[in-house]
Length: 237
Length: 237
DNA sequence: TTACTTATGTGCAATTTGCGACTATGTCAA
DNA sequence: TTGACATAGTCGCAAATTGCACATAAGTAA
Image (cartoon, rainbow over all chains, first blue to last red; front, side, top):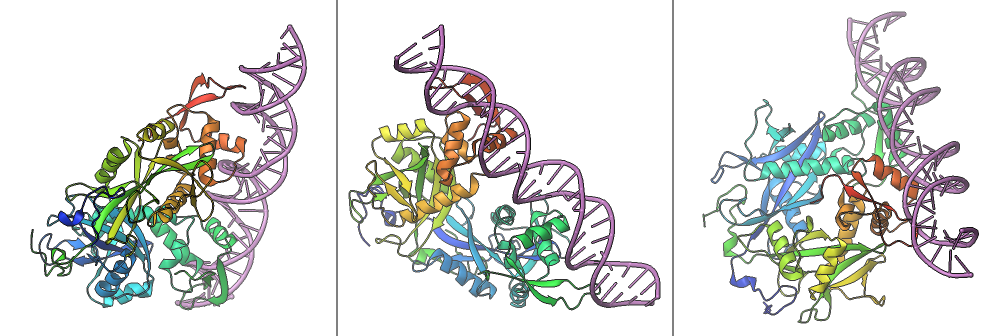
């Protein structure tokens, strides 16, 4: 390793001589079902914080980028590949982990229903419903799950980010299968915003945006008039 | 330090046994003058990248939070206190620094004119004009300054963030002195967006927002009709 | 065939935005 | 003292956006 002392940018400080923070990535894995946002969590079975629920995470190796580390954690701990991953925020409070100084780069991954099912089949993660203010994670019985470390805070930053971006970005589509109805798209928006939206206005806005392509096909299983299925123009990564 | 092996969250990986990334903060210090965005840079006088221009930065100590590290770097390397600092993005490509693996958390600081002057009086930093696409940093003669590491990329992410937030946030005020004219506010918006805006529409929108307070005073030095001075309702941190 | 449910479309009012033209108020120089 | 000038600040209207009530379409289920 090069000697970096007497350096303008890093100012004569040689970090190899000192303790330094560890770097991890944590994944906020969200899905939208039933007009609710759901997050995938792992139950900790060892101290510290045994019994609490945590975001999937892992250390960043020296020879992998942050994005690569996030993708690897998604693959190794959740069993998913190719979800849309986006850096969320970096959390670096000194005491956020009781064991040691850890700086964590949080990533947001938005899952389609089939990815959600696949992750749950893997058996490691559990889905919790996000609700309330301040945000809480609820199990299927409606009981609140205790979260580990600062993960409740990370989840709430994720939800805020989602709310701020859903209007003008194409992030909602990452929650949906390849073909979807306008009602399903509106459900995603309502889940993220926590409100109800006016249907005709929502339809118009989405269709005027020119991003949706009508397939001509209709949904199959409805016990009422079936809605038309749409695709997104530019495949969402 | 606690033994952290066999742990769900951190998955049996003991980082103290391995090399790990170092963590730094880098500051993007921006000001708005003359309908242009300007950034404060340091000239590197030691290898690597001697002669190139870099963002002020420094290592994060184990006992300080990321926000505290950013504030400390601002104080120690730029001689400023109390500027509005906001986390921007974390850059973690493996080869972004040729010496060692460094993950850097970039912060954005928006400076008022008097803060800009104070920083320049400190003598360490120089102001460069940001322009062009892809973004470049120009000196007063219009010549492009070569940037160190991935700092050009960091600057362009900063400008994008600014553009995305200026419409709905109060970030523009952080560029202005306590009392300012509507024209100065519009100049900030135009500098950030790189466009010209319609004056009556801009005035209306700003005044309707209810955030501005007319002081009744007018600017002093104009060689034409003087404009009224306004303040922001909630002091911008 | 009829009731029921959800999809889809239409018309209209209220709000927001873009923009040209107009008026107001200061400085400056003859 | 006065008129040119530059920029501040206002007004009115057209266009675009949005919220919403209501009408109509197209399925299922009895």
